[in-house]
Length: 292
Image (cartoon, one colour):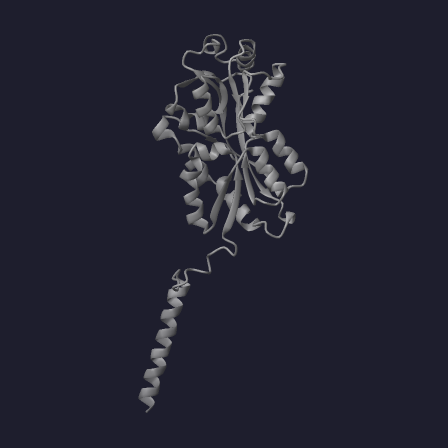
């Protein structure tokens, strides 16, 4: 009798030990590894269309989702609209490229305590038809103000995103610096994303301003070319930042997920991924990582 009791006890102990080994060493039951899953796995990322149209997010987001367990809903809009969503508490984290507007967003109390962090940069380019009827490439290759001024003087078709995006804000900044208020039949307001605007510009044989990343990803499908770039004044610089939305906006803000995303995108590993994106296909990086 004693031997049967001892044997049963040993079986029970072995069973408990085995169960502990399965759960304590990274195992999971049929419902998955609940211990490592985020309490709220749904994360809303409001971001400029260029990060999507360039293919960058498709290339790097799977790494974030695999490492953290979050599922990212990408809301691809202009930077201005992305920040509006943040102000309304309808996004958890922002990845945008309109530094002046971003500063206003942070100063307005719409960000969390860490504010805005640099992520990466590239530049803008002026693109136009192969024939280049305004002669931009010959006369204003590295002078964005002269390029814009010439387009207006020659009344050549210019397609504006007109969507309050970072690219649209940059375009308006250049017109303002050139002392021009663009208007007339030659100035077409598309109210569309960068990829669509490039396609429209090609169809209209006009000119537009594009971020370099989207241009490299989409431009090869058109008959357009870069006619002005690398202005030494820095007017064509294009900096991106990441901002966690202030969790006090409403109870639906996923503050933990936003912080996980922010920490991930400025980490050394992700910065390396960003710097490698485009190298193989285009021979150059589409974005230059510069998180501090």
